[in-house]
Length: 302
Image (cartoon, rainbow, N blue to C red; front, side, top):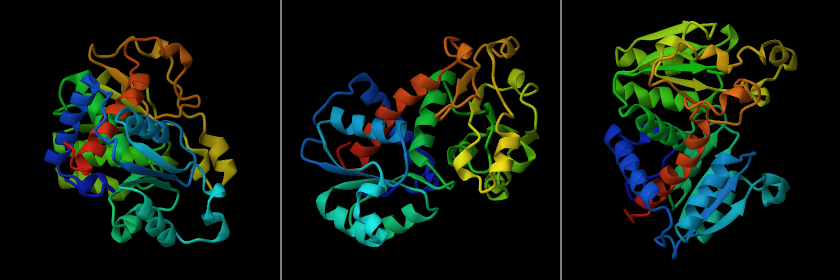
């Protein structure tokens, strides 16, 4: 896995994904080390990010590495018209690995094909978000004790949600039963459903969340993403489709846990936050350990 870019979750086999999770467990037990003290990591975020960018920077800092890069393209030569190709080839001269988020689907794959250093895709448009998937898998195995034979519910924006797309694809390796809850306009794309069908797994589609809650082990909530809509009226019509309240949780399984890739808007009420079944803030912390593991493995340090 040394020097192997991660653009799609499919770039890593099931065994390689599990290797990352094993190493993440080691870093959770000992997160402050100096193994990156001789390395420079470039953090190129062409669109806004809080958890992904800062958890990567936290992971790098806790391992003694140095960070170069930017958190918005407006402060770079991209604003002057510099191409992505030239940006990547230039920044690769200054770093050992590049973490990149870009709103254009396919941009991360392009970067990986031209870059002399490995690329980690931190999100490319509504396509994929593989490091979020790895931390989601880590969160599921920590809360459920397994990744196999689970019922997982996905709620919200399943059409544009890159975290959903990547996680569904990854969970197809584990005999998962999928419960897909969304407005009709935001159903999971057929291209992602094909992965479920190819593995002969079962999925159910719903428009209401209530009937799913008693039957799933993990409920993966997502926000309706305003920035993905070209028609503001369509967004206004469906933006409040789902809102999870504490009083909706009285029929859950004992092992039921709530995940969310964040940011949250109004799809989970704050009265859920203190409930022991709410795991989304711990999930965000898990991102540091998983990204530490990924950096260490890709740079040949683990």
